Length: 491
Image (cartoon, rainbow, N blue to C red; front, top):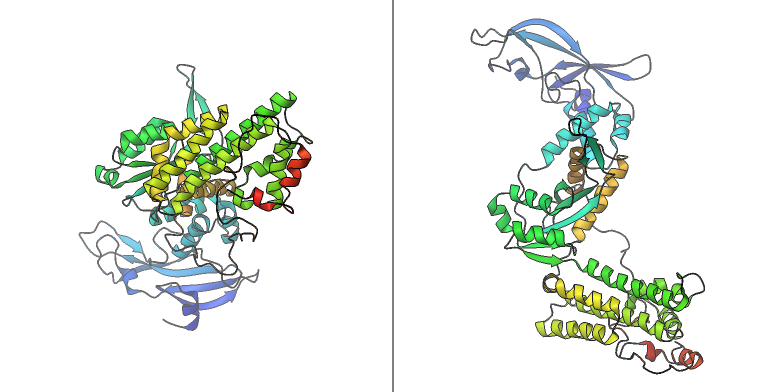
């Protein structure tokens, strides 16, 4: 039976007899079975020709035209005449409405995809589709089981990073009376950096054994396929990777290296403030006023802002020169990391690394000595980053999505539910749920016309004075951008 209403409804195996309105003005669609295979016994697969009775069910379906639709399916119950079959009777069923299901398959799929792929909360999906919370979550679990692979594909570049979720939860052991950890606040995520698998897994805790246990669960051929592992400067992750993946090379993410350099500049500024003023920095202190400019990259500062920062610190005398020495060391380190975009030769890498070490040794500041020591300890991983350009940006993006999913869910009590939703959210691009085409104006920042084309700092023009500096008036006039801007440019 085929008519326009049946085609519009779109439920395979069912035909529409009539449509009427109930007392609330909601459409009521009367359906009958239009599939011969519905009379086949599900146990013995024998076609039955002996009807027993008619029954009426009311399956739930998606709303149509912005309003809910009530379905009334009048179907037959058949007798199974096969003597070898243990089933005496069965009711008709079609693919769109499986046996013992009160929801159509498309309604269940819509509820699961809304939460897993479109970022809708479980509560809101239940309101939109007029379903209960447990029903929607069962649909989400079924959707995740369908779209997520049972076995992981080979991974060439593995990212390891931690993220925080909620608080720690403890439980008292009734026998011993001691408290034991039930749920940790930290999760370690494993991300496919170069592939499209997104988040591979999450494990509770951020200790060495948790990382080793997950990597050991994967088969040996999968572990042999991993060539690079990207981490931040965490000794726990480095030790675990060396034991579980001895053939993989560690890559240190450059973001955390620059973050460490910025922290060294901040520590030097705070030490100078305590030495100079005997208190913490506050409004009115020169080094406090330019603290934000010290965290900015040289190429992102206009001439006016750079002159303000430079002259303010120079006016402080030797304490200001200590802060400038830390800033220049940070920029020299950024110059070294910037080689990752240029396919550098080993000579260029050694040249810039020597310039950074030489400046830290010449400045003779405890913060720079500590920074140089840390760079030396992690240099093999940093050098691998410069040569390959591999970063841990994908892992940081997964952490952002995980936090966003947790906010939308108003927190998780079940870690397994969180892992399902986060994995579905991080694999949307690979499954074609995100449009990667960029339309409209680009979001890339434009470089100012007065910005230097090079990333070099003023290290060549700055020498640490051993005598009393010149007067602030003379220095300010020499470094003013309207009189001599070339003195602020890199040498």
